[in-house]
Length: 134
Image (cartoon, rainbow, N blue to C red; front, side, top):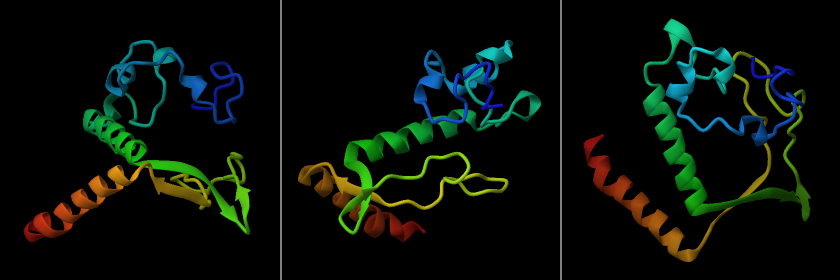
């Protein structure tokens, strides 16, 4: 469904522009009467639509926003050479019911010392304060 050549010029190529123009929330797009207005089927469809679609979408947004706020991401290095992740749809992903990207090298660093301090302060609060309630 996500590789429909009539909807996407190059369906097997990772291109965020495939979803240009889809600016609604997943819950709005998932219930559109016209199936062509759907941007994806990750939350199911019809009577089998995920009842937690609102929570899932908002949690994903918050998690990604926090990661992008706190860290910079770059391709990893091996023997001093940059190693780009394999994004080929055949070789870059595992096979099975749940398809995931294969392991790849990645260089993740805090965006600044101030942000690093904030992250560590919040981590300490979670591990020391909230651990009492586990």
